[in-house]
Amino acid sequence: MHSKKIIIIGGGAAGLIAAEQLSATCAVHIYEKGKTIGRKFLVAGKGGFNLTNAAVDKDLYTQYTAHPILQEAIQRFDSQAMRVWLEELGVPTFVGSSGRVFPEKGIKPIEVLQKIKDQLIKKGVQIHCNHEFIGFNTAQQVLVKHQDKTIALEADAYIFALGGASWSVTGSNLKWLSYFASIKVPTKAFEASNCGFEVNWKTDFKKNHAGTPLKNIQLSIGSKVVKGEALITDYGLEGNAIYPIIPAVRIALKAPTATFIAIDFKPNNSHQSLLAKIKGKRLKTKNYAYEFNLSKAQFALIKAFTTKEEYLAPERFIEAIKYLKIPVQALRPIEEAISTIGGISLEALNSNFSLKQQPNLFAIGEMLDWDAPTGGFLLQGCFSTAAACADYLK
Image (cartoon, rainbow, N blue to C red; front, top):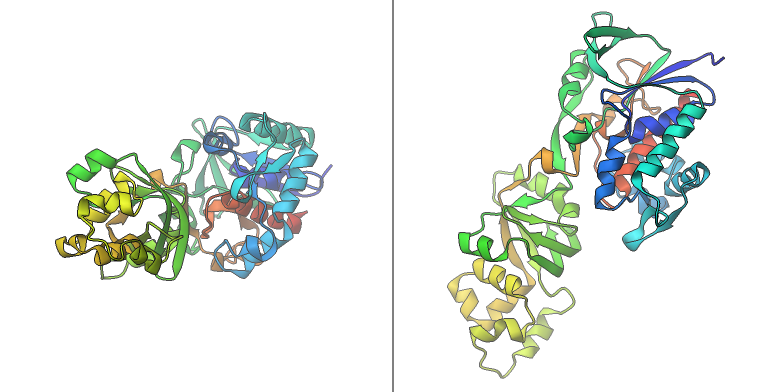
């Protein structure tokens, strides 16, 4: 019989690993508002089920919002520890492209989730689905709603793992922000991260090129520079070269001046080498695409955002190839974002992830205000904060 009772609110990635880590020493109960736990595993698996990233030490923790509580958690339970945990669970992993870590070939997301569920049940974790967190009563007790009944939960400690505001199909929403604000916990409004941004395309450009990739390009805004690929969409740009610059774009959009990103279509060619290609030639505009090896979409994009004078002068066209300024109108809505920032401020937490306002309440995972790129880092952040919190409560 365990002497300590822990209640976890939320059956997502962070809540599940916290439950497993605590189950050996505590009586653990998970309360989940949906019909089943771990739904984000299944949704995330549709795009390639990367569970973490092989980066370690500084290469790992510098991917996240710079804050001591987050850095310490990631160092204590890093990607290597995560892979060991998965191996012990019966989920061997391998390192794929760009350092992403996947379950071995043939292991489906639903199988990984089932192994976690089986482990929790084996260790005596009690899972209560269809129980929605609805806030706190006047005595600041935790309340959940089951069918038409409101229940005040009793435990030695409560771990909240309610997720961010993206992927509403998995149960994430904004409701809980107001519940914590009501007990004077510092919170921040949610904003989109790891998302596309909007560009005011001309109708013809959008009609002819939406859905076309821009390969082997380099994007920059301020000091942030990223190589990769972007996709032209009806609304703007999306893709793996876009997501890492979103934090800088988000900040720039809040300034009173216009926001621009720059595209280098030939990052492996210097400005001088491109000039050398046309030296001594009387180059016509109709030959630009061939001479500089530009795709139809690249050529059309450069033409759309240069003046007539810039377009007609080969030397100035080369400048646009290397540094084409694209005006950004807005980020895409939270509902379309892969992740969000905002939620409970990291400054509201003690080093063990308990709330300074109420030390028997803990918060972990994406409901905290931190940012990280895609590629396994988001899930790892959830796992690390959960494991760090569990270490304290064991």
